[in-house]
Amino acid sequence: MGGVFVGAILALALSVTFSWGGDVKGGAGGGKPGDSESARAAFHSPPGSCLLWEQQDAGDIHLVPCPQPHQFEVTGVVDIGDRYPKGAPSPDLTQWRGLAQERCTDGAEKYLGKPLDPYGRLTVSALRPGEDEWNDGARELRCVLQWAGPGGQLQKLSGSAKDEQQANVWDAGTCLALAGKTVGDPIDCAQPHSYEMVGVLDLKTKFKDYPSQADQKAWLDTECSKAVMDYTGGDDYSAQKLILSWDVREQESWTAGSTKVNCKVAAKLPDNTGLAPVTGTIRKAAAPPSKPAAPPSSAGGG
Image (cartoon, rainbow, N blue to C red; front, side):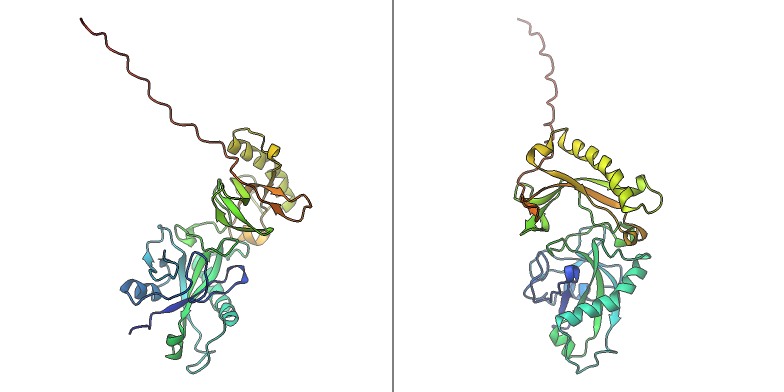
């Protein structure tokens, strides 16, 4: 059965499709997984399974418990033999992407038990047969959910997607790279970056029902100002020519349960055509732990 379990990753985030032999930043790119027991298990895993790899070519792909960090969560298995019988040529990458969106999206929503947030962190992807398996008649797609950063790098998830908000938020202290004039993937804040996340707020702490974006902005104007002051320890971040901004949520996101938003700071280019690079964090450094008081010296007898 050698080679039968070699699959292909189809990443759908950002309207870019990657094959197993393609270039998926931080994920599967070049090469293919071996025929180890762990790879076989990964490529035949049932819905509810979570998959992790660390090697650039994903050759070490294996099952992990979903509470542990992982890149993929399997939501279902679909057969596309009705459209592509044995002997049919393999779809090109654009067709693969369309197939996965068409055949996996409804199943992902049934798996989640709620709508898939079209603006959220989770996107539909698929493990597809490799070329040899396709020629042998394999026609199954293993549908998965993933989280890809703004630059396409797959991020690690922890916990089942069923139990997590889909809101596309980052932990406070996260900085996102600057890719030209656009936003990239997470990067060390000591490096030139676009946004620095200074807080995470939940709109549901204020609003019971979906608030208009005007109402969201009015509330976040005040609350994000508080968040950045806490983050900086009261330092004047505007002295660095930084501006405070925040996310707002669409109705579709709210319906899917995405109610959290980021407060963030960035700098604009002088001509207002995009974001300017910022280097270093504005976060208040944690105070070093205080040393315990020295015990009183005992009086010595002479």
